[in-house]
Amino acid sequence: MNTACLTLSAPICRPPARPDSAQPVTDADAPDHDLMLAVRDGDIDALGELFERHHRPLFGFLAKLTGDRAAAEDLAQNVFQRMLKYRHTYRDDGCFGAWMYHLARRCAADHFRKTTARSTPVDPADLERQADDAPAAAAVVQSRDDQALLHLALQRLERDEREVLLLSRLQELSFAEIAGILECSVGAARVRAHRALQALRDHYFRLQATARP
Amino acid sequence: MNCESIRERLLELNDGRLDAETAATVLAHLAGCPACRRELATIQELLAQVDAAAVPAPSPRLRSGVFAAIAAEKRAQGPATGAAAPAPRHAPRRSAWSWLNQALAAFGLLAIGYVAGTRWASPRPADPSTERELASLQSQVRAMGQLVGYSLQQQEQHSTNDRIEGVLTSATRRQPTPQVINDLIGALALDPSVNVRLNAVEALYAHADQEVARTGVLISLPREESPLVQVAMIDFLVAAKDRDAGPVLERLSATATADTNVREAARRALTEL
Image: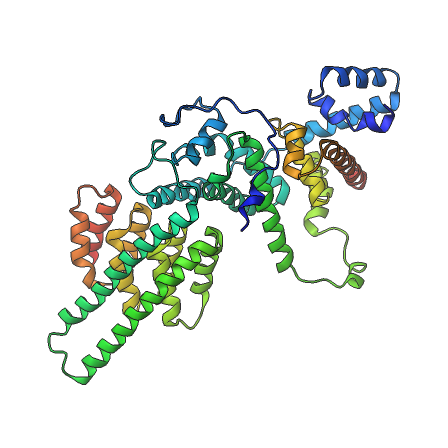
């Protein structure tokens, strides 16, 4: 794998001053950036603290992105494994959160590529005869549970729409950082998030209308 | 700014991410535009629901997998860890050499185990049947050499999940071949992931009647570091009724540094065997 693709193209946040490298950074109060620098420099245990801090939101992001909890667990594990494998690519001026979600996006892309490759090809001519909703989706609509409808609407977004929308909900990331992760301009990231939100609203309202008695 | 460009900023306005100047411009527009105000209200409601959508906690499998990877990386790093010993810039290459050393050590142990076991078990290797058995075991030792190479290749080229999938696929094969059993023993002896090693033990149950499977587990047991895998291996040896396991189990039950559960499992196994 080309490790160059795992480095972010531009410094996207100003990290705190680098700690004295002679001192192992394992303090629970140490900034993420310092802990990751410590991992890069050989203090592998520091990754445990980063795991404790970030595995829940990372798992939540991946679970909503894939709509599959088991896959999200595997992907979250892959993200931390890639942190270990590519730790030497983490830069002095890097930003841990942006780097982690950059890796998460790569892992998710690999996952989608594999699942797409494994799925059974469907003749487009047959699509017309297929039910619009899977039984699970029909049951969700029947239940009129707003959260379940929202989940369904989220899964009906295009993958890149869902991705930018979920990234924008991570409060630790600025739009400049999201743009760095998506490898596009800040303006383009902003427009994509806006369009994704509009698409989510449309799907959600359509599902609500279907659920209405 | 027109309505479209204002609406592109509503998400950031909602999250308080706009700079003061842009926020003032957007707010001024909203004051005079009912349509954009309705859009903001809709967005706020939708985003509140997106943010409130709860995701259950991941299972303990995630934690165990990540910490097993950390432990494996530390093992691969060797004793000189810590910030005072900076990691080399080419971690994968160093890791491969480390695994090669471990693999060769394992291969050596397996080879010694087979040869020594054969000689002790056959003090008079003169008759044709014993010679055939010896030839068969020598062929198995050669296969072990191949599995070391296979395992190294697996670790370098595949993720943990892919390797688990590989082990599970091996387990479902109806016709066990020596290569399948060798691959499983290779995974058990050499894979850095606890999950892969546990799955390998499970998969070996289907081949418990094969001497090579039992010997592979028995030889790997003293080298195993994870108490979870050690207990699984002991359970396997009991299920396989491997009476040759006695000396190894006795040593393990008497090892003060071994995990309490492992010592207890070893003592229980000795009773059952």
